[in-house]
Image 1 (cartoon, one colour):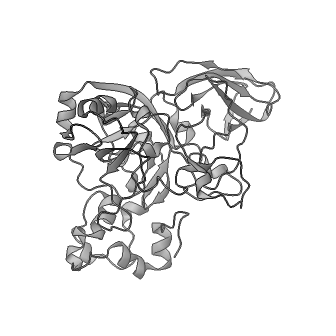
Image 2 (cartoon, one colour):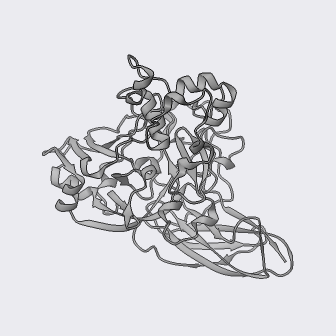
Image 3 (tube, one colour):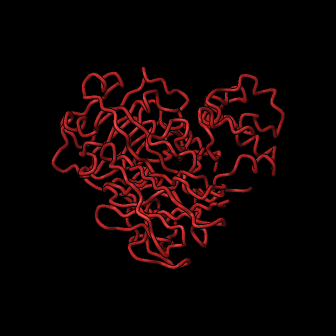
Length: 431
């Protein structure tokens, strides 16, 4: 059967190649259940996770029928212009020109799922347990969080660790993100540090462990799709949030409604969605996607094909310095003078400069760069470029961060295709 680089079957290819088997697997009942009862088992997770609801007349569906919602990409309901990379789990990125807003609209924030979202995302019945190495374990409703802690709204950048993977040569395994697995929305919630201070971390607590309500693609009871964590020192900063709102409205279901973590500047997998539990541990967390090569890179440069021992991989934490051109659109026509603009960010740091080149890096132009609206937000930049004559041009963008680290033209290959912060290039046809 056709598979993506994670071993997950693409829905369209799966149904096309073997419709009977695809139908049987996708809509199979849980053990001990009849076809009528499949929504209580694995089929519930599969269909509910993608459609967001059950199929009352499932028994009448012809074999091999792909629901029209999938064919129309309505799995992205509530999103605007995103490119669907994978349908099980749902992963979708935002074309660069649709990220032009200073604050990323909810409809244009990328989606990165590892499993199948829960069906019931009712905030009224949702709870978060904080336990492990704490003095006073506690369980909070969303209303409890809002009542017991200061509610803050802040713009925070989230970027998938694999953003830019499509540009590695030879290809690296995983979703082939180009540049659009990033966004900077306004998140409303409470500081994780405030919640931890209330429950009282014990002296030997050094790492968090995060758990969500999404289910594994297999539908196996109790099997987790993703459970990551971060050092205590990171979560005790002021801009790590337990968020329950996005851009002044509810969280989008595919972006973690009704409760999620937002850990700005670090790989997006740290920002657990559909959050149900935070456990404090005395060691680095070892949940799914925390061990082996998941979200890890070699400690030293490697060549494609090199065998790298697992112990020589280190956990991806902060994201590297990066910039993005959001206007004009790639491969578009332009006049002799045009305002070029975009965003830049660098993990926990700020960006000190953004430079542009229109002559393939021979000379550089300094762009005007805004300060971040708050710590954890990306920075907006712009520069009016005058092209000397008609013809084909490329605009290259290069950011430099507060520690003098400059965005490279290209980076070294790594087995999982993480942390690609090579310069963004936009082609223009100048009349």
